[in-house]
Image 1 (cartoon, helix red, strand yellow):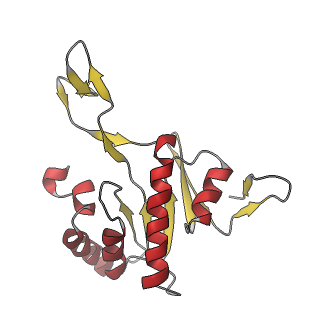
Image 2: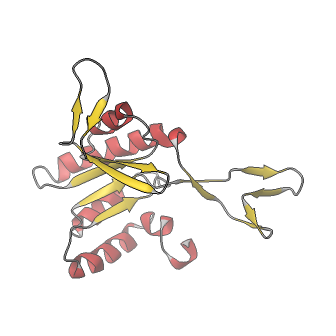
Length: 173
């Protein structure tokens, strides 16, 4: 929905991010986290804009804009529905290195601009194992989100404990 200034388009425009986060936080009665698009050069800018407008935290990353391929019979980008196609969002394990870098950048920004203020960061992207979750936590995530089909599980830093015998993370939910 970029033509309506939503989703990825909002995450790329810090003024719009500030405006919308301000509206939401003015009316919210529960904590608010803004989900960051990775489709921007410096992800810390929209993250800082969201936090400056009262968000308790940010989640990173959303999907990466991509074209999944080209159908060589129709010569159209994939996926196509009734002859129409648009770039979509790429996720799964191939995005993990990008997600880790973006999470690390946001974590450093939170540590320098919001020290001791309780702002949180939730890491998302390519998490399949406890080791993957540990990597996000070691780079500054307070929580890690895992998508399992249609179920979403959030793992917090306090819930993840490293086993002394191996590198797996045991999660108590």
